[in-house]
Image 1 (cartoon, rainbow, N blue to C red):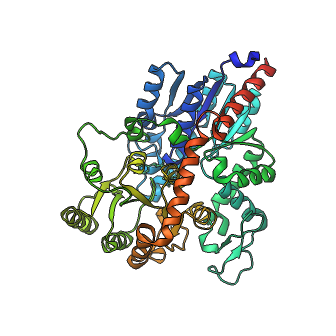
Image 2: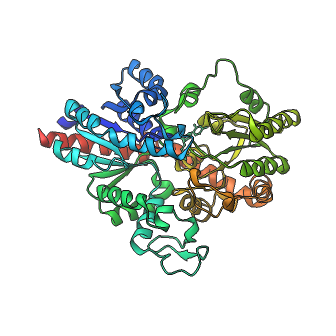
Length: 492
Ligand code: UDP
């Protein structure tokens, strides 16, 4: 055994302030601590509260892990107290302020780096300046990418080759060059900043430059799922990469851990939806969620409600209230009527605002998911061996859909066509109730879906194996930690 095996690594994790980035990074930080590292997660007060229970529990079990709380400038920005996460924004103006507030955190974060003198910084992709901080400290910076290697390759090849330039129409499909599979895409499905240059394009160019200057990439994925694309990614970007996922399944083992992950859900008094789920047959319920950020229009909500009802299948639907002033209005009345009707027919259940997703996906009654194709939701569904109805909305979600439907063949597309972030979603991108009924019937009842279900179960088994001792993700994490220790030794 080399001396480095006895060294303790000091690692700082810096997650971005949104659940889709925070959840996997906090899971990964906890894994580092469970394997001997001394871990600090830098975050703000309100965000710390959502993870504190898990961190305290790890700490009390003897692991060296803590949060380091910094101040979010809510007052300065005129944001309501406690709004420190992108998921809590209810207007585009609030969103602008949060983005600005996150940028203002840089001096505080840099002073924590100076104070703690870490051996490595694991930084979310959206803090590109941490490349300089790590260089000053002469330590490695890992670029944390909370999505797939496949989508990373798609982003890079679209940026490089701009295959959509010169197309006659925005809905005309074009092949994405450089990939291992033949994937076609319409410009309307591309991330908005790739379709048309905007402020985000400038930011993303800075992010990509920082990626190439990083020591390596840490990715929540696994080799058996997309090993070919991991290799392609490494060869394309020219840096190292470690896939250590699915981190959610690796670290959140108990029902309590699953329920509290990302937000606290009280299970003491068995909630209505859990009793309801317990009463249903295996694989008979569809879980419907559009992630932590999406705000659907009223017109779209009406179509989803009718589509679910008309499909005749059991469902649990997570509906986010839009914010201040909600609880009255046309939309609320419609949803309350719908909820009462579904309760009476025993066909469906609404969970308001936040669902303990890991718990629901792992429940034996859950047989599929309607997903907006956020990478975490995909990986969590894969871990539970579930096939999916794909309903991408924004960012890289359309790329993920292609991976699920065309490469892995575990997804049925609902037919969404327009890539738009929630604050700009209009009537043009609406998916009708008939399209949803068709997709639900295909996924939950057709011959075609039997094969899909088998493939999803097989991937679920692979997901379980890869995080066990000797599995690929397990070995990757161990190898990465050993490499970081060797680097620490060589600096001493
Ligand atoms: N999530 C959850 N309950 C909810 C909504 C989201 O637990 O009601 C979690 C989900 O399990 C996932 C994350 O929040 O870990 C959402 O990330 P994803 O990449 O799926 O989508 P995003 O929210 O970033 O669009």
